Image (tube, rainbow, N blue to C red; front, side, top):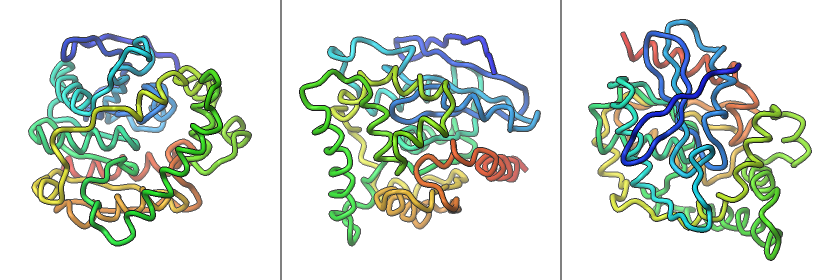
Length: 281
């Protein structure tokens, strides 16, 4: 699907986005090593009842600055999302977020609940609420080992290919499987984000910890979607959110991991669309 990108003036910068359709607004928030292209292939699967809007977060392509000079900030991304919703006239919007983007959406909901109608979150990359959970240290150590192995393999070399190597570890797929199962557009998207991988992990974390107490105050209807084969870190975080968010539901997609949205798009869209329509009634 070829869509003409637009620009929104947000929080002192301009963010590129694409949209299609009319009706209930859905804003899509991408995760690491990606941009709005991660969502475009889903647009045709949604019914005509929706206005689908996917934007690229600050510092990601094509909003990517010089990777050696940037200092990424979670709070900056949160404020960007809040202002983006207002800038395009979507409030209150339904939000669909993936991984890091799902975490940004959740934090935006805590900050500005008036801007968000409902949320569908695929394995949010946040762990403030599980720091004292039994087994947390073990799952965090495993996650760090996964990330660390990629950086060790790439030490002293140009970043070419590091995004696909990292995606392979996080998604639980071989690099060959990614190349065979992901569209050429998404493969190109990964390649264009090689330079942002390391700055992402040096990001300034949020000054507002997303504690269990803050999560319990978020009343927005939320669907938490997990992949059966994902790393335990993501399962632990999502399971705890289902427990703490007062108006949430959890579902698991079988035989997929962190890349479930891409590998089973029809199943994901069916779950998301049904939930959003339900909350709109």
